[in-house]
Length: 211
Image 1 (spheres, rainbow, N blue to C red):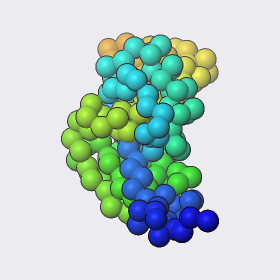
Image 2: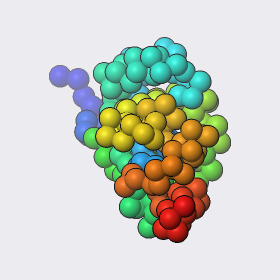
Image 3: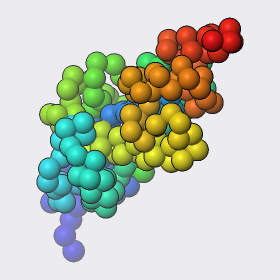
């Protein structure tokens, strides 16, 4: 029987805590006026590479959907989490985003040795982490996380569009487009809007005045 001494040192680790795993983390939904902010964390499998990973914003919706399924199938593990509309209003959007990112990392089945986060701010984590500006275009694991987060939030927008069709969530995904701002003026905010965001607060104030 072969001795364990013939294995390289890093392979003496227990199987459920593999060495050197790197998780990529990104979010979707910081800018919109409505809905939760969604974050995802992904640990890719080097043995099952995924072609075509890129910043989710540079991919078509159909390509993102296809990659979403492929990432879920091929990644070693992935986790999707969110911070609610109430948490965004209570904490502010930056802190809520970091909270969603932390939840995504904590939700991973395997604990990463290193976490790479898109942007310039890091959530509170109990493992080493690095913030990488434009990481979603540079690091495949971050690209994968950006796709999971974006598709999840876009699906939420499509779902609530059926509930509140007058706001057009399926089209603008909650961003403050001219059509969305016009709907806010006409109908006032709905329960899905972020009360602390200026256009929403302004529309609510005008509604209260009877305008």
